[in-house]
Length: 211
Image 1 (spheres, one colour):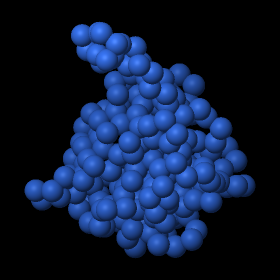
Image 2 (cartoon, helix red, strand yellow):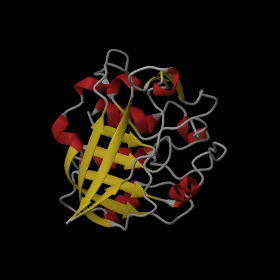
Image 3 (cartoon, helix red, strand yellow):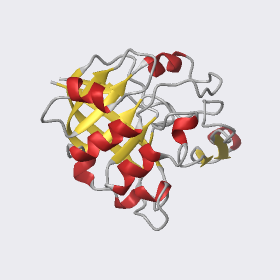
């Protein structure tokens, strides 16, 4: 059995969405100063690094991260590799997704950016278009994940955020900020463990188990 940690390390200076402030880790108590233990305070946005989007992120009154169905976060998944320059579409999923898939993670050109975890944030990304989101709902997908900080295409396509709205309204869990550089396409067991917080997002530790 081999376990792949596909989570980004939360650290000061890491790449964050747009102009959002990065995480800070501040010493509160230190052994070197005579305290009995080292203790720190952490401040970060709830969409920092690898994280999940619950319905509340885009749907007022929707479920928060602490109410996400655990059975969607654990179980068999397929990693699909998309090497094109456009966005993932329903046509791509029709020919590439396993028929019995319930969880899909997308490895794209985005993953290469994580070789520098402090790279300048970019909107030049591969994402999941509205047709692919509708396909996922129609085919009973429980969870989708992407290897950058948003699953939504940038530019004119994002007007109204159709990908987020389609997936979240149907209860599909979105995982963003995956680092899939070291993972080959194929079948895995997914373990996605977001913080249990009543918020519109939650940082997560995500593992892929290869048997």
